[in-house]
Length: 249
Image (cartoon, rainbow, N blue to C red; front, side, top):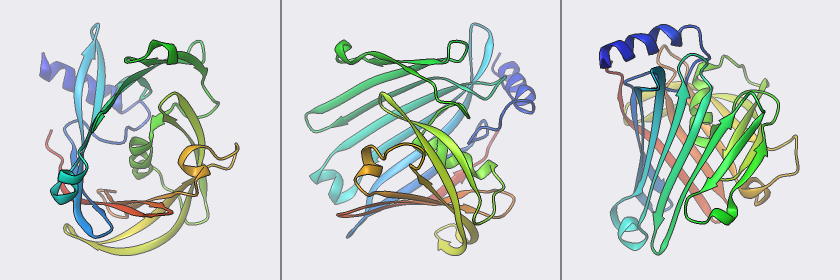
């Protein structure tokens, strides 16, 4: 059965919008924050799945603090993005996180026929609501939207719009191809293109209203690996560097 699902996902995937990761692909990022060079880890993996006999692809993102920072500030999060293998559109996104005494657990289900998304707070139903889907590409979460840029072929100066979910909201972002840059990581030296999402079509909200910037470096070779992420805040920067990649089927 698993081989059948994998075959269907692979076959249908050739007709659907390309996903950020291939089935069986895993990426591990080491997160640095200021003086904490091993502050955390982000692991992203894609697997073949199914629901009611229909092939799906689930992309799971696990985030956790590590080392000394992990002892001072414990944080764990898991996000699961379930995609329809036939269309490449996300069907449902779930996220859970734990930080000290604070926990979150929510889901967003998409109805493309109605043009809506249902946000469900699994810890506080008073926060449940239905939001309209913006025009354009189907929504992704922030990490998968950054990973999605590896399937693009933009040149510096060009842009592309994306819809990105942040809890109960869907942000309309414009991703700018900034420049080509050569960088060195534990996996080697790469010629990359740098992308930066900006909130230009609507008034800035959330992290963008606070002046934060996000960038991703995509290798310009056959792998198109996202070799680095960086989030700049007013009080410091978090850098996620790709340290392991597995492309096993």
